[in-house]
Image (tube, rainbow, N blue to C red):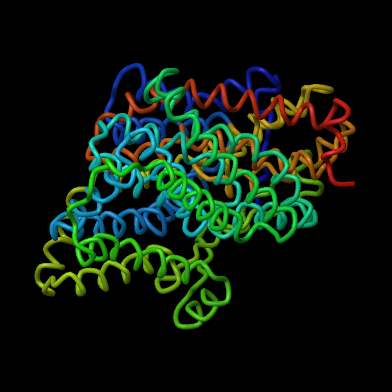
Length: 533
């Protein structure tokens, strides 16, 4: 028997919206106000979501339980699998002393910590967002920053803020590909539109993170490098998204931005600049792990290569009880649609598996014995044990919210805003990522709703579908999954509430700014000319 979602279970729009928001409020309050440890806060929010789903939205308990199990499984694989292996690689570099060499050389290239922020958090992070996504950028950049001398709070929070502008084109364009799949809008038009929304924010994000770290004085002293990094990134982001497509936007833009900053620093260097004191072999050794990781992750992200790997072992497993047992109904979708629940188990082609292979290659090249590799790996598992539980609980919470229809209830509340819908529709994308932890997931959840509401309010469906993805990037820094990844990478587990408080206002301000930008593109001439015909 199929259960139909009900988006107004209390027969009162405001009351139903408040009901749907309770689990999110419980989670945020537990973390930020009551300072409850994140794995307990996530468990409490999950229990609340299950109660709301069953008794508030009328969801059968078997479906609610199955959706929680499905979400937890996805949290373990592929997300926790990526984080585990990235931290394994990081531990190998620390134990072998290569990370210290890498830190020393990076400090010589960019002795100013504010420039290090731009290179590591923005440029390096954007590369890994484009190649892998799913927590990899924050895990890597936060770990590097803390070794460069940043506090755990700054390493975590600034990495989260920097990981915004690249997110809509992350993981070889996956969010735009997913948006195309659920809306049937032309993928190139979606890429073009997102590429006309985000570059202005790519321009300001490097300066933004410097401002958040060292204030206006720090920005005045380093504005040249920050402006150059953002300008080059934004130009390449616009060009690739508009004239090629969504697949390689972040990779090209990040590499161009990093090269521009390094050239800028080299031109500014004087004869009195410090000498590294590192030999060429030491420098090569320091960068070897990251070069290997970049090559492997890039290969694993190529669609054709991933297809070959999938042929070696990949299974699609319908989730018992849940698969095709729930009906999503209008106005969230054009026509009623049965919700699928398929768990993809691809142990070879998963990004985390590529990272694991890179780690083994690096460990071997650095002289680790099999026994040493095994001990380091077991130590890494022990270190992130609480984080893994938290990620599983958070994804379980997100899936209960999705399959109960509570996410759509929140979305429809924002959609009832008439002429101002372009502003609030963009905020819906922000909310979607804040709830799910993924721009891709937010696009799948709300992409079709955006196109339907856009048609009803006289706005371009392409504009609002793209706005869901562009607005969503500003929610990435406050989703619990990303915060847990950052705290784990910086060994700051238990400080998630502090991290959330650090980034929350930044997220709100940036979300409002991009929502205003989309509103101008939708309603105010000549900005409307930016929308593809």
